[in-house]
Length: 178
Image (cartoon, rainbow, N blue to C red; front, side):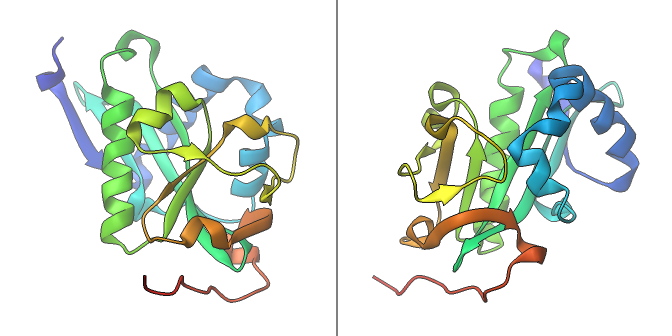
């Protein structure tokens, strides 16, 4: 198999069962106890910013984006990102992240956050969120809270507990132009 055999597509409802299988395989039953999963329980992900990779008509990887809020700030939360074991270390996950970030920028999203490993996501444009700036609804390693800022000042608006955007109590405020 070569990367030329991989097709990248916007996610559709027809992909849901295969995506669920990939996430179960990648993260196991423990995924339901994670902070990011708790946030995702608050509402739907954004299919317009979510993508799959297919090979031979089967979904082999996926990435989802979920709208979140923290204080006056708004962003998308990237994840889960999962790749079937036989297709790991080929750049498929990185390509999906790049597609999701490009779609978020095109959709005028202010920022993208995630819980992940800085050595993997740092080269893709993510940096650590300052300690104490945001809180997750369940325990999380604060060194793994990362952000990719699209609109200057957007990450600074994120403060307090992160929740699904549909559950936010305050209206969105955009950063002032520089």
